[in-house]
Length: 329
Image (tube, rainbow, N blue to C red; front, top):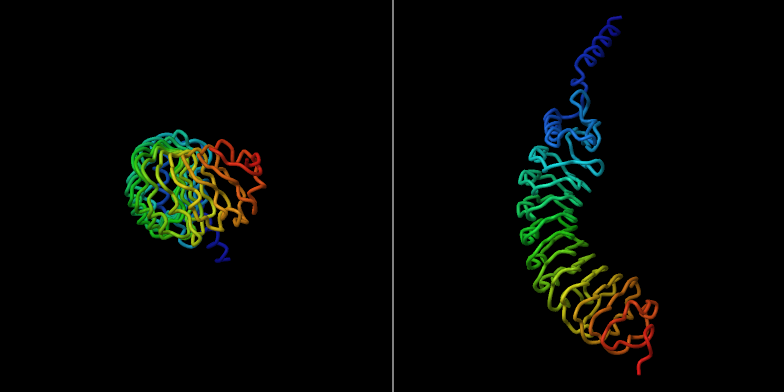
């Protein structure tokens, strides 16, 4: 009988004081409610209520053992205004994802640099402005950084290469200017994914990028880059995807040694001269090729997959000929 009474007292206490049954850390809960208030109580955060367990709230995740907030991900609904500085007061956060929040404005707040456990930062498809902040290099646990489709301007900070675990970087579809930092050949992450396309970057592609052998993806398209990108290639590289289209690159393609790992090569709309190297026939995994709108000449090498592509992969050059184009004279 006594045990029944104790049980009733226990459950009555939980009903009267629900906070005692919460798994969520109270400091994290307080911070999340401050974030909600800063965003003017948006509908997408309706479940964030002080009378409920924040580990069960929409858009957040808690660690199963510590019950600290490890993820804040808002990829639906609508957030408006600047990112609140209170975001930096979630010390166990590993993932911060604010995706397609087109009414998110202002600069990236310095408070984000406090998130020392952060592994993934995605702030894309927003109206964030200002610069790509150098303080992001303080996030030494970061493996993935995506700031694409924003209104960021100015130069790319060279300090990003100091991120020891980073292997995924997207800064495309912004208004970034200046050169690609020489230090970008120093990234330590394996199978690196680099996308800097659709900006206003200028200058030469740094030869230092050739130091890193294991870029998986390099997209520098739709910029104002000049010079010779041959350092990106070589038989010792493992790169699979390269898009250098819509730049001002000027080099002799016949002298390029393409890695056999290459599956995608797009160099259209540049000032490339020479002929197509026979080495292209050895690329057995090549799925896409576009060399149009350049100054290439000579016969398209026979073999491999080169004749499987349509003529639209080769046209608008100086004097390329041979299948799938017209016969050479």
